[in-house]
Length: 247
Image 1 (cartoon, rainbow, N blue to C red):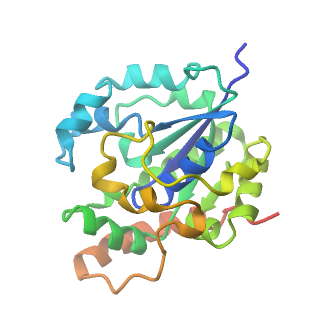
Image 2: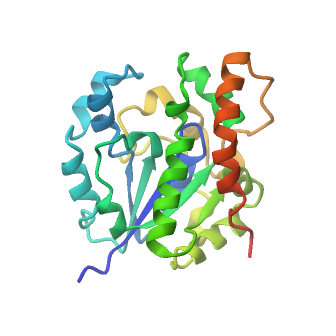
């Protein structure tokens, strides 16, 4: 029986998901994978994202192939296999049984802040694009499977207290906290998705959560984005009510 600990971290876009991936990759016992269902998602939906053709060429297009890899062994036999997943990538028709081999956790951010950041990178946005509804669905599925709530982490809480929140997250995932998670070298990683030039400019300059992109209150949203935020907020609040606190 495999001794690998697989961690599936479920986030929407424009959160601290890449900084969180950096923290785990800096552990000596961990290998990471960056948004492995991205190409399958683009192929299934036909959506036009930045660097679409490069993404499609860089990953398997069949979700089944990706799912098999996510429930398999990491390439060098590391003890921890950290998987950074976007909730909106799991479109209807993509199976989820593979996720039952993982310890699932959920990284959240206020929808207003997500939308303000997302539209800087991509002008068109829908409720589905920010993944909040799908995140709640995946969370409730995991609650039903476990009979208890899986860990929920608010990105702003991590930025405010990296050590405390990473300790709490590691405890909830039943892995030891490692000091190396608090800082990392600046720059791009071989593990980063091919889309990094379009999305990762700020995190590539970071060396820790304190240096990650600032999460100041966004300006008022225009009416179209406000409507999306209002639709997303009940789902966000349901998760936020159960988020981890420092230990």
